[in-house]
Length: 324
Image: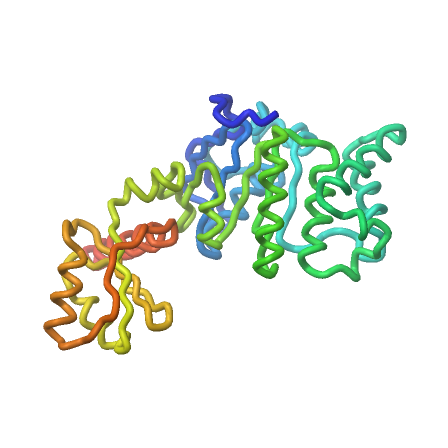
């Protein structure tokens, strides 16, 4: 049974950091992941997500900060942590010359599942992840989406209380991505806590709670709804046959944070504007730009993340200018 809503922390970190020589990959990451939830760690490539995951899994020692994972200290108890977690990366890391079933049996042995129990465990995972028809197929002949399913089954063969998924859907087609997320929610409903990193912002909407990581730091945490509300964004969508001219006209309007193209549709993000539709209409009318539709739309997690990154970039540029 899922433990969603529990206050028990399965992952807790404070000021986690990691250096590689002069490179600071992670500088200040603080997380609190509750038992039974799907927790998303979002950020662009190079933000420090994978380095953070490797520290939490006991693969890398932190340079600074502290934390616990499934009740064990990440500095002192790395080997204990490894036994109690599942870990899946974006790169297919299974044995391509073995069948699906042989891979599951192999990983079951690695995780210490006895011979008397392994057959039942393999059958349960095959059934749960929908691998029945592929059970005897050589793993290397599977498509990307099926390989991801096999990797997920192997990562959960030992029923870990915590599952790490590091960019699990990178390079997978949209249908396979949706099916994969259905499996993640089933696993969480069975009681496994899931921590997933991704740079696909639409996947954030599928998580219970999120942490944004940028330049190796956490810059926002909460549920998708909380993060969106906290940012105070409003978004206007408009359709026009003169999208480029409209975008140029809107980017110079006060309180406009972002103008994004989606074919003939523009999404215009505002902060601190009480009547954004009227502002958009006035800006377009001033330049005689026609619009067939102008209306408010719900801000997305991606809108919020872009806004936060833009603000961070502007603040950094201002600090550098002052220092110069």
